[in-house]
Length: 188
Picture 1 (tube, rainbow, N blue to C red):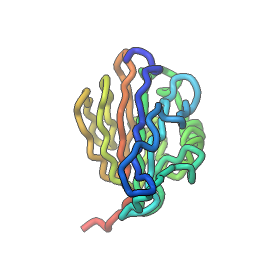
Picture 2: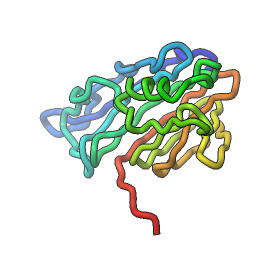
Picture 3: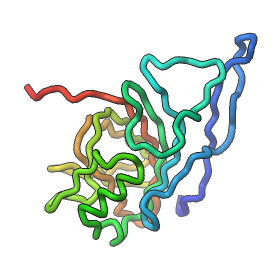
Picture 4: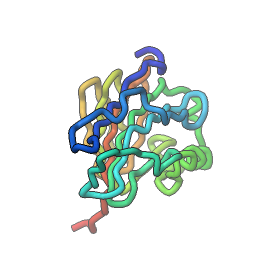
């Protein structure tokens, strides 16, 4: 995946009036957004639920949310694909204010934890459990006190920790994320 134009399909199932399983749609995702301009990631919004347990509609659609929103709705879930281009100086040189502005583009300004001395300018934290799956390429998960590079096929279980994603390779990285709304407990 040397270019971020490689497409994939979003296949959505549902039911007809007789309760029989049917295809509702089978097409590339229609909601894609480059975040933060050149050098930034492209988000593909695939689907979200509005509650858990999720209501299973006969004719599901996701038209209730038009913009790009970082976390899932309260008590709900979200799945998205993100294409991370190789990280350049336009990302590494971000100030705290620049980072906050980028998170504001995805209604996630409260998630930004950018600060002087942080291990990465795009550090952020959400009250979610996220399953991140590397589909293509490699990427470095940056935490407050650790980091690790994950590769195609690897899965990260992100438990509301402060983190950033840094693509230090020379090729794009594509990841799938399932985000589940959560609540922080008090440390014991």
